[in-house]
Amino acid sequence: MRSMQARLVACRQRGTLSADDEQSVQSPLRQLKSIFPSATLTKHTPLDILLTAPPSDPTQSRSLIIRDMGCVENDWVATEFVLAYFEGDGPSPPVSLF
Image (cartoon, rainbow, N blue to C red; front, side, top):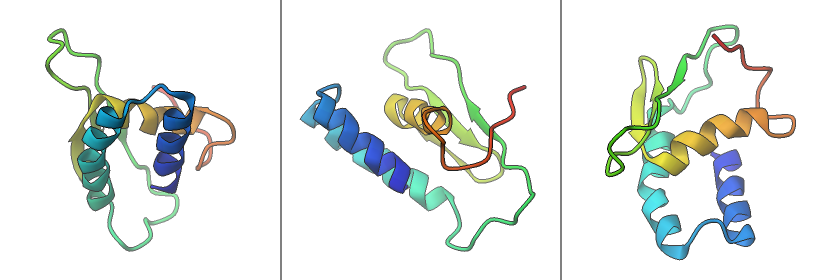
């Protein structure tokens, strides 16, 4: 969540996220936070995360699916969550792509 909040601030500072968009992202960010348990995840246990393809209908949002935990449907949250792993050092060991 700290990484997502930092990305939110960076987007706001760069001017790539409007105030309205920032407000609309708050609820999906809280939803993302609620998906993860308050306890630490077990080490060396895979965490399957799926970013769905952009929908053909522009009124629908992209989904971020965390297997066996939940799903968040918001373009910004889904995209930025995945990008957080590839930009800089990332918050976790390298992600394996299938």
